[in-house]
Image (tube, rainbow, N blue to C red):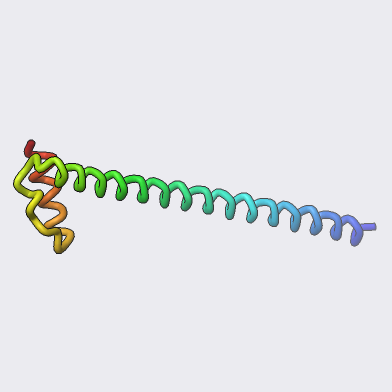
Length: 83
């Protein structure tokens, strides 16, 4: 009788552990997807903004070539922050 109860308790605990693991995996996947979507949206917005500034020629930096992250950052500062 005690052994059957232990098997029942072990089975319930195993099912609960599996449910918790599945919930944690789903939450992690959702968080990763949200982060990826936010990063993609920000990158697209920055690229569109840079191209719109270049197309409108609203600042001298439209002639600047972006060769590195530093030049991209200075482009952003010159074209968007200083205006």
